[in-house]
Structure formats: structure tokens, C-alpha cells
Image 1 (cartoon, rainbow, N blue to C red):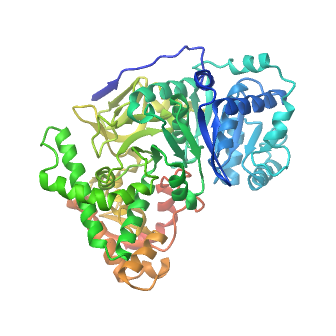
Image 2 (image 1 turned 135 degrees about the vertical axis):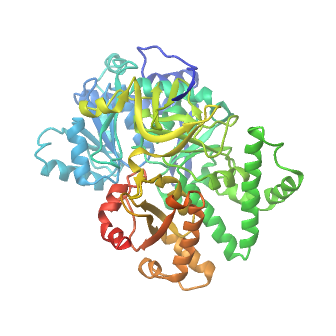
Image 3 (image 1 turned 90 degrees about the horizontal axis):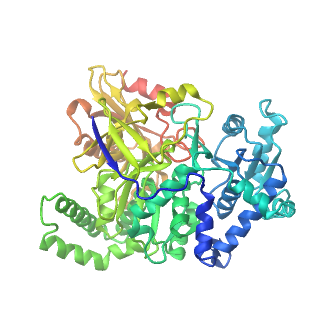
Length: 609
């Protein structure tokens, strides 16, 4: 059993709560832009004073409507500025925020509203209002319990944010302060539901202390990112995800100017206009940017040049890593010379895709391939990979600008201890660990051991305290020959290929390991263009020998990582997409392995005859 810890850097008054972070920023500089909002004329700064006034007005409206301290309020919306205003208004009124993914089905909405006990729901627009109202009208579980649905958009339909604020004009500042200060660090601030990869979502009780202590300590843990002059970031991950929400609170504590966008088609345009100094990114974004850059180079007849530049970036980053481990002096003169050339002619174009001012990116939510991490760092877009779960208020480990090892998820964040159990499971204790699962004592009994949260993930700690994730305990496959196989590293490697959207390794109880692979539509189109062959649809491509040969090469690369007994013997190319709507991905784009195996059981059976 091995442990690693990082000491707490900041303590807080037990009587304080997350709203005090906003009051601190306002007291420090009421005209400082805490947020920026996109409009027809571009981005407009939102000073601390304006944001606080909007929050207080909505909080008074909630109080006027009868909200009492500790009461739950649901929010169903894509990432947008109003989501943040509503979140803090709920907290100022003493309430508990219950996020619902904007992609959630009616049955998921019904379950979360029922389990959380939420009596009020904020929704993004009329479409979400119609969905929620349909759930309320058709549900015996919720009959007569939900008091109202409030829209966030501004088309004049009531009830909306303006009408709610207007209803609170009679609430005194003293009454608002009484409810705002009712909660302490130990009280629940949010019920965040797990993504449901292994069953019905469970409500995680995230406390004010979880959010506030993580925020205060992460700011000092990552000063090069959060305390630089004029830090800016653009949030495009779903705010229903605890990682996005935790980072948003961290940014508030640091005084970072934060913008919101949820339109994937406008992301590159928004990055160029907003010019963030750092970004929270999921691995799929890196994969898309890399594939897009490679495709553009191929179309311009510079495919080999891009491949050479990519190889140099990876080698350069690996040399930096080796030097950090004391295994060399860093990049040699020839590598430095090659890197210098590409850093003038090619890498700047890649950096410009992120807005041109980006100092660091933080990758989370799922594993990032070592190749992509090395490539982007070598090209001047440093990637700091971290690790966490809903139950740990997201970040419990992270690489830092001064302490980085590519391929690991970093060291424990302040106030956190990581322990590796005898069976390899990662256990966590610390300031981010949640209070427990809402109204689920059976799950709580299974979730903790000796005061540590059992993550269900497998990993190892090196001598310097860096954590490496090696798999998921429940995902481990045991072949008929008794060989344990961790599917994650194989899947990540295959997914690096331009053609691949997802790969699912199977073989539990079977004589050998195989894989289900589906195709990325954009990647397929770009690949066909590069091969100078007609564009194919998914069904045609799944049976195409050239496509299969390309994927076989990706499988061969993955097999090089493991022993022969663990290697993928064969694969099937599916003509179906894995999406949130199909039930095969969570809203945070994690794979629902059990759903894939269930729905494609016929394909699996044909593999094994």
C-alpha cells in the first residue's frame, strides 16, 4: 500500500460558504470583469458589481417565492452566462443547486427531480420548458410537487429571470443576508448526479466546503495559470458536470475573467475572439484539433511536413520529460534546431487555433493519450492532465507547470491524500471528497473504507507522488484463459486514429480479446479526401477494405503496448454512432461500456462464433 499527500495551503472559517468568494472579489474591485458575455457585437465584460446585483435580485425573487435554506432547485441548461447567475442566486437564497444535463431524457429528468426533491426548475429555453412540463404532467411521482419552471432566455415569456427578479423587490437586504449566510462549509451546496455509466445516476452531496476549499487551494497550487496578469478562460464544457462547475468557482476565487459558449460549431471562432490565457479541455478536443491540422496539411500537400513537425514536437517533449527525471540534459542541439524551425513556421498556426494567447491547457474528464500530450506541449500548448470524479468535486490530482510528468495525472492537490489499495484501487481522502450519496445509505456503505473514498479506478504512485491511471476496476476483462486485461490503454491508442470515434475492447470470459470500433464522420470524410477516394457513408466504410486496413494499423499500434495474451485478435467496424442520445455516451462523453456490450451483443457473438 502506497500513499502520497499534499498539505493544505488555505483554511477557511467553518461558518463561511461559497458565496463569500463572490463578496471577496466584489470588495476587492467592484469594476473588475469577473465574466464576459457574448452578444451580437462581440464580448461584453460583466463587472463584479453588475454580476452581484443580478445574483441578489434573483435570490430575492426565490426568497419571495418561498425558498427556504437547504431547499433544492434544479437547473437544466447548456453552458451559458445565465447558468452561473442562477447558480449563485440559489446559493445566495440559501438553496442547493441540482444540475441536469441539457441532453437528459424525460425519464432522467423525472428521476433527478424525484430523487433530489427539487420544487423549482430553471430551464434554458422553451424547448426545455416543454420537456420539463411534459415530465411534470405525466409523472405520478412529481404530481403537484414542483412549484414552477423559470426560463433563462429573454423572449418575453414569463416566468423568466426578469419576472422572478421583479417579484423579489419587497425582500429586504437583511432577509437576503440571513438566508445567504445560513449555510456553512459542512452544508450541501449542490446535488450533482453521476453520469450513470454503471446504472441509475446517484446524487452526490457536494458541500460549500468542497467547492470553496478546492477553489482557494487550487489558486495557490497553480499560480502560474491563475495568478498571472489578466487571466482569461472560455468555458465550453457542460456546467452540469462537476469539473466545469468546480473550475468556474476556482476562476471566481482567482478573479479570472470567464466567458461561456456552448455552440461547438462556433468554438474556434469564439476562441479567436476571446483569446483565453488557459483552457479546460477534454481529450476529444485535442484529438479533433490534431486530426484537423493533419487534414489541412495533407490537403495543402504538406502532409509529410506536418508528420515531421509532429514527430519533432513529441520528441522534444519527451526529451524535456527525461531531463525532469534526471535521465538526460534535455533536447539535443539537432532536436532544438528542428524544433526552432517548426516553431517559426508551423506551431504558431496550431497555437492560433486556440486564440493565440494560450499559456496552458488543463485536461480532464477522461484519459488523454501520451502522444497527444507530448505533441501539444512540444508545439507550445502545454497540457496539464489531472484526475478526479464527481465524488471528489473533480480535481484530486493534477500536474503543475513546475511539476509535470506526461502520462501521469499529477500529484495530489492541496489537502488531499491518495492511497493505492492492495488490489490497485485508488482511494482518496481530502477537501474535495463529497459528503455522501443522497438518500442512499447502501451506496455510502460501499463507497468508503477507513475514511477514504473508493474511486473504482486502478492506478499506481511513483516515488515522487505522481499518480498513473491504469484502468477501471469494473472494466477489467478476464479472458477464458484467466488473463486480466485493462481495456482503457488499448482503446485510447486506437482512438488516436483519425478514422476512429470510439473503440470498445471486449473479451470477458472469452478465449481472446477483440474490439468494436465505430467511425468518426468528420475523420472519415477527411481521410477519404486525403486518400483521394470518394467520400463514403458509415455503412459502406464499415465494409471497405482500405478502411479496415487503416484501422488494423491502429489496432497493431495498440497491441504493441501489451503482451500477446492481452492483444486484440480481431475487430468489427460498426456502422452506428455512439452518442448521448443513443444511450452509449454520458453527457460528459464518457463511454457507457455496459450499454455498448448489451446493444451490440449480436456483433460480439459473431466474433466468437
